[in-house]
Image (cartoon, rainbow, N blue to C red):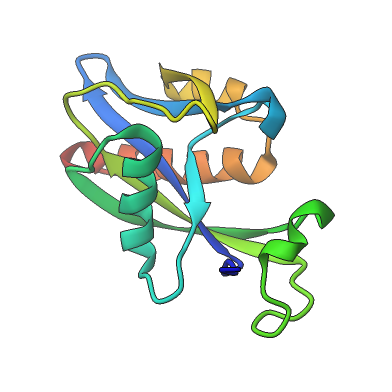
Length: 157
């Protein structure tokens, strides 16, 4: 069995429109709790955070970033009991939390192609729409951090 690292990335894909920035949110399938989020996923052993962000974005949407920026925002969340067996007890004994690092990725062109095993819907949202759809406080705070970066001169993202 290949064990996971207790490290993840959260990537908010954005695109510039004539009406401002739009955020891509993905909807998890009901079997995976049915909530809206950005792209998220694990960082593989030996993989740099930025490389994981690019890989996860491509795996979950088929999109490649034109520009990728790590945001000065990270947080931890508890590992649910049902997922603890995915983490090596010898490398990460007693893993109870996962740290997640936040990125914003400017994308252009194509629409996302989602994986039906993970997501059943996607939507390009205004900042306010995205805030209203997100449910996890950490995801909301991460979005706020991305918005501050974009407002502070991120149009050249």
